[in-house]
Image (tube, rainbow, N blue to C red):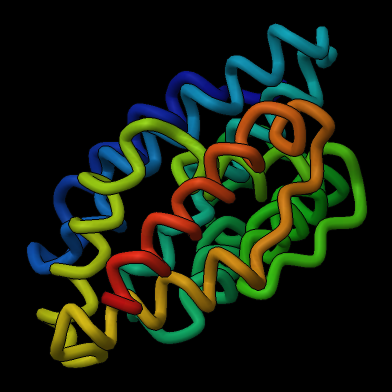
Length: 194
């Protein structure tokens, strides 16, 4: 039997302890935000308990690889999940499902199952929300501290390209997040072109 509550407590503690301090976006707060969005999907779509636990487990591990490296963090998270999950009662089949959920969040996202679509849309839910700017600013600060970007001009160009290339996958996100995301693109283009 899956011991999800114990796992959640352990992984959140490890994220708090082991994530580098310069990860202003990919912190425990991001994992909890994605979890909240997934929980809303679980309730809204009446997802059965076993699938809900696997989805929540995928969320716990989707950025856990950052505790090892920012490069290929999804693969690192999947490897760590494979090592940790047997101790919490997960079967080999359940572990494979969790690994696929983690890997589905890799950009560019290519989810295949309904659960994979949900985790992908939850991971980038903020792109179509009112809190887009404060959250995106934390990503700007993170990329700047990691030396991956230097100026706001570079950041705006990167944001526009990313937002235009990104697609939501669930009906809810297409109807409720895509329109707001389109507004962000127009706003950013206005800033960038001025």
